[in-house]
Picture 1 (cartoon, rainbow, N blue to C red):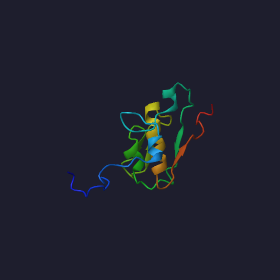
Picture 2 (picture 1 turned 45 degrees about the vertical axis):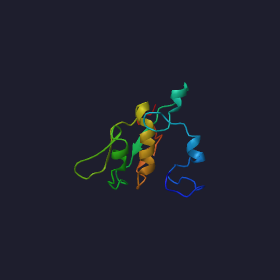
Picture 3 (picture 1 turned 30 degrees about the vertical axis):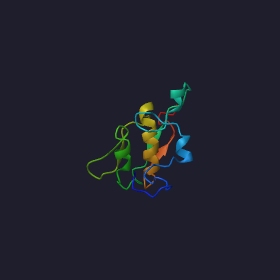
Picture 4 (picture 1 turned 90 degrees about the vertical axis):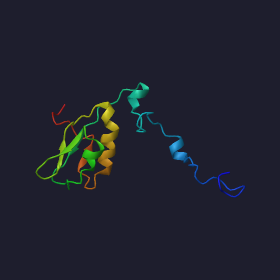
Amino acid sequence: MNGLPTGSPDRRRPVESPDRRHSVESPDRGHPVEPQAWGHSVEPLRLGVDRDRCVGAGMCALKAPAVFDQDEEEGLVVLRQPVPAPEHRAAARMAAGLCPAGAIALDSPDPAGS
């Protein structure tokens, strides 16, 4: 017996949400699978940061440490990979969404102009 009255649903059992049931995730980390995993070619993700807008919250560096860092003097964002590797793209997108100042731009223009 589980200690619940007969006929009561077991409230400890997680309920699957419809959105989660249909999401596509990688088995190792639970992150969305990148489209190239399905054999599609994808343009590289280009990132840009606005250090004047950054408030130093550090969410980017916590979520995507391979892509973002913080400088030691002011704690402002440092972009380590303007074009993140495919395995870091999902985390970079998440970090951009978590930035409280909106200091991270996705798909920013190529600084080389190509």
